[in-house]
Structures are given as C-alpha cells and as structure tokens.
Amino acid sequence: MPRQVSIFLENQPGHLEKVTGVLRQHRINIRAMTLSSSSYGWGILNLLLDHPDQGHQVLTAAGYSAVLRRIVAVRMPDRPGGLHDLLEHLAKAGINIKNAYATLMPKPGSAILVIDAENIDQVEKLIDEAGIKKLSCEEIYQL
Amino acid sequence: MPIYWQQELETMPRSGLATFQLERLRETLRRAAGSPFYGAVLARRGISPEDIRSLSDLDKLPMTTKEDLREHFPYGLLSAPLDTVIRLHCSSGTTGNPTVIFHNRHDLDSWANLVARSLFAAGARPGDVFQNICGYGLFTGGLGFQYGAERLGALTIPAGAGNSRRQIQLMTNFGTTVIHAIPSYLARLHETFRELKVDISRDTRLRILVIGAEPHTEGQRRRIQDLYGVKAFNSYGLSEMNGPGVAFECECQNGLHLWEDAYIAEIVDPETLQPVPEGVVGELVMTTLDRQAMPIIRYRTRDLTRFVPGDCPCGRSHRRIDRITGRTDDMFIIKGCNVFPMQVEKILMGFPEIGNDYLIVLETVKGVDEMLIKVEISPHFFTGEMEPLENLRRRIQEEIRDEVLVTPEVRLVEPGALPKSEGKAVRVQDLRHRQGE
Image (cartoon, rainbow over all chains, first blue to last red):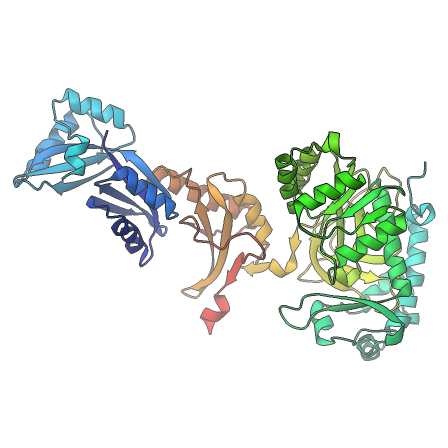
C-alpha cells in the first residue's frame, strides 16, 4: 500500500532546505509535498517520494523525527470541476479529509489527489465501495 | 555493638550542642580575625568575637561568597602562618581564579575524623575493605575519603576513577565491602559486571555503597540499590567546607546528618537572605567551627536543601538536611516569580513523549519578559499528525504554569537540536539583558 514520509520540522530558515539536501544526496525524487505549520513554531512536512522506504531511512538516520504514513491516491480529470466531482463522491461516501494534496500526472489531462487520514482503512473501503479507482504504489511512485 | 563513632558528640542534647557551637564560633572568629579578609570585614563592622553572645548573633556577621574567595586568592582568608599549612585543595578555576582551601595538621585530622564518623553512621566498620572510586589529586573526594576510611580502620584501596574492569578485579581480589563512587558511574559499572558475568551477590563481598558529589533523585538511588542488591548512602560535602564528611546519611536513610559540632548550618531565602521556616527549601549557608588554617564564616554554598523536621530514630541529635535539590546559581526571576530549572525539569521528565534535553530561554518580546521552553519530541512519539503535538504542547505549558506560576511558551524542536545533558549542559539562556542594551 502506498505511503508518504511525514517529518517533524521546526519553522526556521534553512530547515526545509536541509531535508531536501538529504534527499538530493541520496538521489531520492520528490513527487509531491505539502508543508503545514502550527502557530507555535513548528510544522509537519509531507513528502510523496519515489522511494519512500529509503527516504524514511535516510531522514531518520539524519536525525529527523520521520514516519511512514499510509495514504490513498485517487485519479481525477485535470479540468475545471475535476476535484469537485471527486469530492462529491467522497462526501457521499462519508469520508472526512483532514489533510490532502494534489499533483498533476505526466500524462496531460489527469491529476491525482493524495488523501492522508487517520482512519485510512475506512477511507480505502469507502473509496472502493464508491467505485473510485485507487492508484497503485507503482503508479504513484513512478509518476 | 556501638552504633556511634563518637557517642557523646553525636548524641549531645541540642542545648549542650548550642553551647558547644557558641564556644567554637568565638574561637573561630578569633582565628579568622587574623586573616587579611576577615580582619578587614570585622574591623569595618566594628565587631569583635566577644560581641557574639549567642548563636543568634551570627546574623551580625556578613556572609562570605565564592567571589570573595576568588577575589582574595590565594592567601586572603588564610588565618595561620603559611609554614604551618600542610595541604591545599583547589578548584579548577575554569571561570576565573580558582578557590583554594588550606589545611594545617589539626584541620586534616579533624576532617578525617568527620569522614570516619560519617562512614561509621552508614554502617562501615574497622575491618571493612573500602574501595574509593573517584578522582584523587585536587578533588577532595579522593584524599578526603582515603584519610577518612583509613581513620575508620578500613583497608582502603585508592582505586581512582574509571577503568571498570580493573575496579571489578580489585573488588574480587581484595574482597571489597564498601564502595564510594558517583551515582552515574555506578550505573555504568554495573554494565561491566553484566558483561564479565560477575555476580555481585555471589562473587563479591559488597555490602555498602556510598554515593555523592552529583545531584541525584531518590528514584536513582533506589535503582542503584536494586542493581547492586545493597544499600546506598548519600554523602554531602563541598571543598570550601573541607570536602566529604559535611553531612551523611545514617542507616535510617532519611536525610543527611549535618555534623553540627564542626559546622553551623543555616538555611536562608536566597533573595532576602533571611532564615526560612523549618522544613522549607532554601540556600544552605555554612560556618566552619573546627578549621584553624582557614576558617570560613557564613559561606553561601549555593546548594538548595531543607532541614528534615523531627528527630532521627538513630538517636543522633545533629539535624538532617535533605538531598540537594538544586543550585541557587540556576535560579532566575521572571515576571516577579522565582523559578528554579529543577522545577521545570521535574515536570518535563514526567512526559515520556519528550527527550531528556531541554532549554529555557528568557527573552524580551516587545518590552515584556517571556519564558520560552524548548523540548525535543521523542521520535517514537511522532505519528505525522498535528493534533497530538498540539495537545502535548498545551499540557506541558499548563503543568509548568501550575508549578512556577508563569505561563511559558513551549516550543517543540527537532531531535538533537538542544545541547546534550552530558557534563555541564546549559539549561538557561538569559537573553533579556542583551536585548535591552
């Protein structure tokens, strides 16, 4: 099942750069990312990587608090209303999204939505039941 | 079987002890007046030793600080001719002039006796084999315990610090029954016991541990007792008051008897310098009563402790102090509240979600003094979610506010971002003055 790497990060100049430096050094590619900040001087960086296990390992070795978190990625059409149509389905299925981010597919015309939620098993089940196609690990990591 | 080294002195009724102290205090002042420093202090205040009619007159005398010792380095407090002095101990002096303490033959004799008395109170006896695992040289723990244990009549092994395999070899070769070491080393030494598969209860004759020279909690003591399967007794001393043998736990292990025939102890509020009520924590202030070459009067030890109320079942009349809970050097004032880093540390150590290291930063933000506490989150606790971290931050903030009455800003930082707790870690960074300039 697909996973992202989440990292605890202080909200300080240069801290994000150090993380990307570690990834560059190990030739790990970032497919997508989000950074969310608390109002207390720190935040969480979510990284969708081409090699999540290795990324987790090298960041942990570099001293970061990093974890692998399961995600669900679904495809949507890259046009006005594309995300809306998808969310309509998800809302109908009763899925509450706490954290999500989107990225384009290399193939023109489609995009993906990455969903990071606490009750990920439940989310997967609801998405399957709604007949929405999930992306496999290979599809995501080799975006 | 006697349980006292010097029964008459150790069990002397309080009233008799007070008379004894007063006599010795006058004698001490007469000697001190012979030193350049105290000669000038007493002259300036117009006080002669005869003006001290009761122990409560002690507050007519000014307190002595470490800075006084440094400023009048090396001979300013020497009260005896230099050619009668036979030993000195001094601090490393990494932050200025060292502090040096001189002893004549009587002083060394008196000190050795106090250490022997202390060890006896903890249960050591002539015939014991005493292994002294600590640095010799200028540090007082080495020679202080060496001479004291010899005075007791123990076979005394000057093992020195470190080299765990050799320590264990000495213990098994010579049947060591009593060990003196710092608590953190005993924890490390036990690892070596395990590696070498030496069983302490089967392969050694160990029966008593003496621990000191390093602040530690009751929990740490219990852990060491569990590891070694014998009792560990707390020792307190400081070089300005000779070294070890100032205060020591008896077999009751409930506070350290401070030898009041040799020292006057006061516990004062570090701000007002007025005595605190019995049982309340304050700064320990001490006067030597039996040191000839270099008496020191009302010395501010900077150590925080309290008198343990009530009598000790062991029958000794000398009051007990509690284990040292911190140093006044560390205290800071913010928004009118006195705060000790130990208070903050105690709260933080109750949170398994954070690491051992922390940093308190005092800063002026828009003209207002603020306390910022940085803590490292433990990698095991991080789940990638925001909420648990926000909750943790709020809980730490609330608990510290309840303890010190100032609301801190709590900042979670990345692992490894703070100075390590090994050695002299910086726990408080006061940036207020720098910012005000």
